[in-house]
Image 1 (cartoon, rainbow, N blue to C red):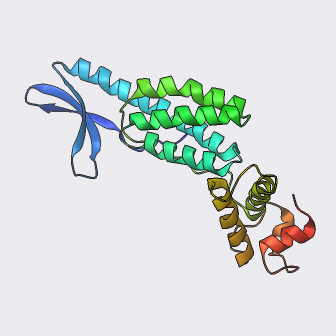
Image 2 (image 1 turned 30 degrees about the horizontal axis):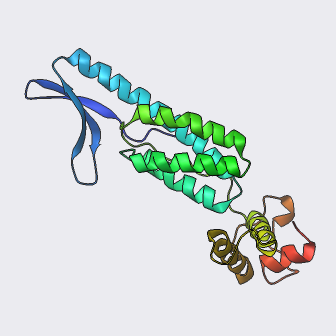
Amino acid sequence: MPEIKKFAKIVKRKGKYCVQSHRRDKSGKYRNFGCYDSKSEAKKRLGQIYMFKHQKAELIDVIVKIADEVREIHISDALATCIDAIASETLKDNTILKLGKIVCILQKRGYHEFADQLDAMIPELICIGDCGCVAVPARKNRMTADKVYKIATDLKEKYLNGLIDEKSYEYSKMKEFESVLKVGFLLPPPASKEYKELPTDSKNWWEHFKNRGTK
């Protein structure tokens, strides 16, 4: 589970018990989560904040895993943008709308399990609302050279079959990945004992995988 980065505390202000963020935000102010007549009410709200932060951290962890597994770059990138927005101080309505659109795209592309998971999270995210920021876990599936080559060749096949055109986002990503692969050995090697050392049979990753007939 992602580490909860920021906590809240109770402070007494003008006869009221207020729940505020433990640290100042970027503007130098403390975020106020509500003021109450009694300390017991403030403690109840503080407990709610902790609970919501825990739930939000768990939901982010699931979305990160989905972003890792989806092989289509534009969907993964869109999910990454949503993850950053959810993890920040305030969850905005346009983030929820974007998640809804991603659910529809996932359904159309055949990622039904991921679409159902994400769709089930949206009401939970709305209920959680504003409870402060949490840390985003590191993506586990690094973009190693073999994965980038696989995505680039998959996109190239779609392009050659007329499924994407030169104006599409996928086409621009295909060209970008091809260029990175052809520069040399900048990308991390595959997670295999075979690649303890960089290849010597080619000048770059693109040539290496192409010569090996990697798919």
